[in-house]
Amino acid sequence: MSTHIEYQWHAFVVPPMEDLRQTAGSVSDHAAIDRYVVAIEGGESNCFDNRTGKRSRSWEAGMLGTPAQVLAQAVHFAGCCEGGSLLPHNKACKPEDYIARIRKLLQASRIGAERGYWYANIDLEPDHPAAAFARECRLECRTEIRYGTTRLCVSVGSGQRVRVFDFIDRFPDLRAWQLVRVGGLPSS
Amino acid sequence: MALPHDATFYNDTRYVPIVFDAVPDGVQANLLRVRQGLQPRPDELLARYEVFARLCADRAQRAAYQSLIVDARVVTPERYLKLWREAVAQAITPTQLHDEHGLSVIACLEAPAMAVRGATCSWTSTPWPTFDELREEFAAQLLGEEESEEESVEAGGETSAQARQARRARQVRLELDLRLDRAASAMFYATSMFSRALGYDSDQWQARLELRGAVLRPQPASLFDADSDVEKGTQRGAKRPAATSTLRTQPTCQEGHHVHPH
Image (tube, rainbow over all chains, first blue to last red; front, side):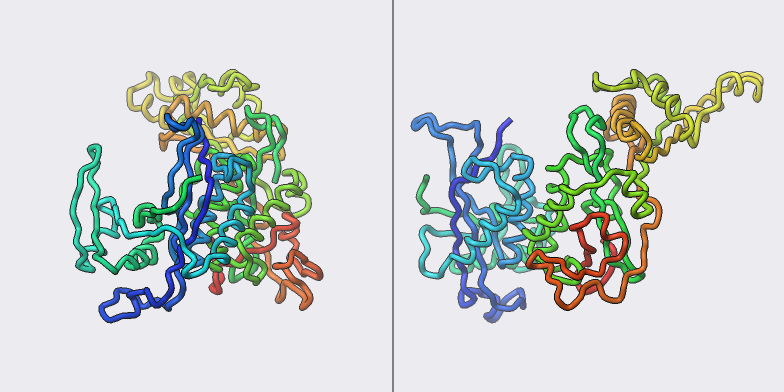
């Protein structure tokens, strides 16, 4: 049995001015507030890199949205801490401490002090209500079959990556890694 | 509420978390479930980590959205979980729950009588080799039982296929107050017996907990004095309804500004 280890966290701040929903043709009328994309470097405890011998790890979008949405997603993950299946820095951690860690990360993040990048990569189950929403928004959708599973990939177009926040606002059951990918962050 | 160590095979403390929700008529005690209305799963004797996993799956997330408030105050999810951690540390016994607050937790076991006759348990630690012994020990708590073969023959002469079918459909129903000695154990091992005999996902059997007693209490006009401060962790001067002191650090919960049960 493996546990999931998290090594690093990084928050991207998305200021309201980048929020397309304030512009004409927007699909949501939510108040303009900062949004965040939280990237997490993590990996399984029993998977090792063949070359380095270290536990394998990678960066992935972990949480996404307003501070409240991000914290709610952090709470969801934190539920795994108490049982020991999620270990930040490979150490036991209380759910409260995990949530506080993410809260501090949001508070410490600043616009313009970012490393790396993030981009929209919307990957849905074809029968998820978000798929219908994507079509309703006239976003380009294409079906892909991966390992025998059908997925719906949605393209949001250049410069419109913040449209992912419309998805997370409407469908809180979606996970950040279904909507966003991250890159350019240093490995531990 | 904490259960004895021998309640399950795992030999650890198991909990039955109880939450006191503000409702229009007062304060209502509920078993902590992820969402009310869902079919209770048969694993409600929770390990400590399962209590927190359950909280993080639902209520603590609502605290993040400020749609769940505690004693009329907004709390952070961290603070909300800390309150529960204190409650778990001070968990009380089923007898204390009854004596102090008039609440009883009842294990309701129900299955087709014929199907579970002689059913065995997957756990070698079971005090009851078969369900028959368990049923015998708790005979006084038996609510329903199939008729015997002799009674059936006397009543109808010879047993028809229809009668046999009807008898198979008869349910054995046990209601065990967890204050009873070994009742929590019986809940755990009977669940295993039912699951083994009928399949875990079968809807033919049930093993669930029910909270009974004074689950609804009138709420005082004000829960707090002016100097109380939940968010800072102090609860000085809190005017609690009697039921809320069960979980000494678990105040009443209220969802959003619209008071209704969870």
